[in-house]
Length: 264
Picture 1 (cartoon, rainbow, N blue to C red):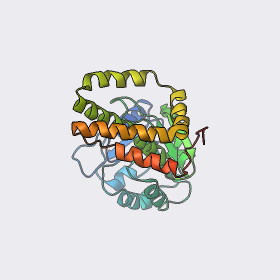
Picture 2 (cartoon, rainbow, N blue to C red):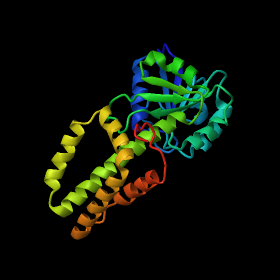
Picture 3 (cartoon, rainbow, N blue to C red):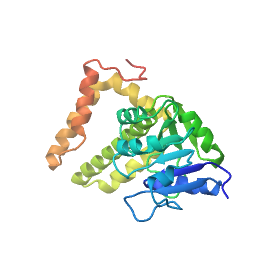
Picture 4 (tube, one colour):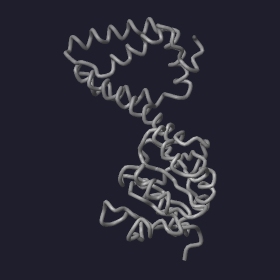
């Protein structure tokens, strides 16, 4: 028998399944519904959206399910008094603000997984924003989930997630491009080990040094990149990242400040 409020999961995702499992272990009444699949990843499965949402304290929309706005529009009239809507679907901060506007004040929460590419099976930490964020965190707190309050502004949790994505995918793109360049030079094995050693030696001070060093020596670094281009032209490899790096250096040379740099 459940000792905590009813929580509904709409749609399905790997993170959602992990979260649902933790809630079930903590004694929450967990119900799943997803009309797009024959079997929900959480149990039991409701026969309809109306049945799923009835009596729920928290409704969590995961996606993929259908258009997030369509899901929210269908849920709004079904929510009982005091119920909260947590949105873990994909989208941009602007989309989250539009979805929040569909709900009365204090109901909507923008929820985003805090880690980039969390390990399968691990319980993800979650950032929560929106006018309903604090209450939703309070309702789910007995589960032991890692829920961090961000702000009352819907979209700010999603903005954090997308920033982390920009950073992680950007680094992954540079590493990939560097290995392709090394391959064209016949240095791929050495380059791979060099990359691993570089990451092992990095710290917060490394990032600060990169920022200030770039601001202070941007002209010299621009020349070095030109030499890199010349070298790769000789091998026939066309870098996927150098144009963006050159564009960034150009902006700095034209006066755009580097945040947190001590050299500008």
